[in-house]
Image 1 (cartoon, rainbow, N blue to C red):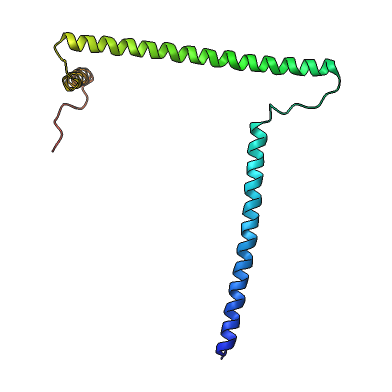
Image 2 (tube, one colour):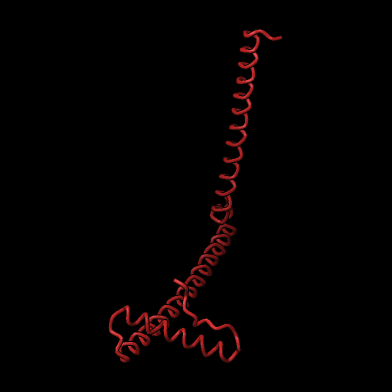
Length: 143
């Protein structure tokens, strides 16, 4: 049987070993985090890193390619923005028309307009379900 002193020494050795392994694990995790961070930075700045070229002709060609890439990216972004703007304008016009039609029907408050839209949606669903012979969605929800 081990004495109390021997048990304390054994426990101390175990704690020391755990601390060492935790320190090693922390160092390895830190190395992995640094590698991931470095890889992320490399991906992020890959296009921005320009090789050092002494020949002025080659340097001019590299700059032209870089400028062309930038112009292409800007043109692509402009097309995307124009499409988004057109979509926004269409949606705004559609909302305006719906709002005007609801006001023409006599729905002034927001709550009245929402109820009217719900009724229209329910009616259109009823028509679609009746045409397709599907499930009746007009049943009221249990409270």
